[in-house]
Image 1 (tube, rainbow, N blue to C red):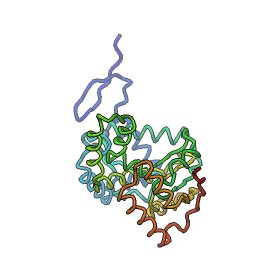
Image 2 (image 1 turned 120 degrees about the vertical axis):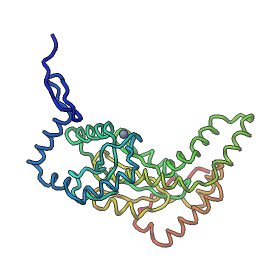
Image 3 (image 1 turned 90 degrees about the vertical axis):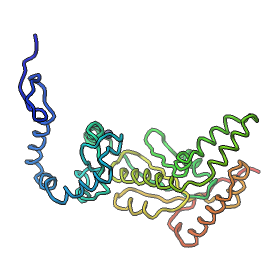
Length: 297
Ligand SMILES: [Zn+2]
């Protein structure tokens, strides 16, 4: 026996559907009605001219495409939900265009987090040091991989510019018949590509913005060669416990290590000069020095 049917409006047309089907528009209506009663500010906000303006601005910026998958955009959504940060609701930087599917996925994930999520400690450790100072080894000795987040800025950079692939390739494939191919790749990849910085920064900022609103991790480890003032500004309002650490491995020792593994290039010494200059300017003053073990001779 077929199910009982009902007549509903779908995209302006009358269609026959199963009686128990709750159409999206009905669901939306119910949702909006409930919200109008529970949170009248919301409705006022979504009807405001200012919202219409920033919404259009965001859509134009995103070229009417979903920022997550590139399909046609369906709506403009708050990255940090306005429920969590009401003051951010008109900030165009906090808006993203999404398609229907990506928005549903995001909403589902947010709901699960809100209702079943565990609040974690969110202790933030910012680790700094010269290249080769052993930042990654330090974090590796402390990290709890099940509930920690490790953000290695430099590693992300080398994964985006292809140097990571190159190093894996050269580790796995040291046969001499591949040396030509290898040196070819090396000379190509070591040309710096400034465009990549913007992408690394973008990912970094997105992660920081998200970290501000979620207590998802016990520890967040941020590895960065250079101190970053924006990081402090972004984290200062969260109330998280933030510690700034710097490995005390000397420049000489780091240079020696990098040379041993063939990673010392001209750009390395430029980087180290920059670190020394920032140090003189006092940008590491609130960093706590971490003693590293001396290598056995
Ligand atoms: Zn999408």
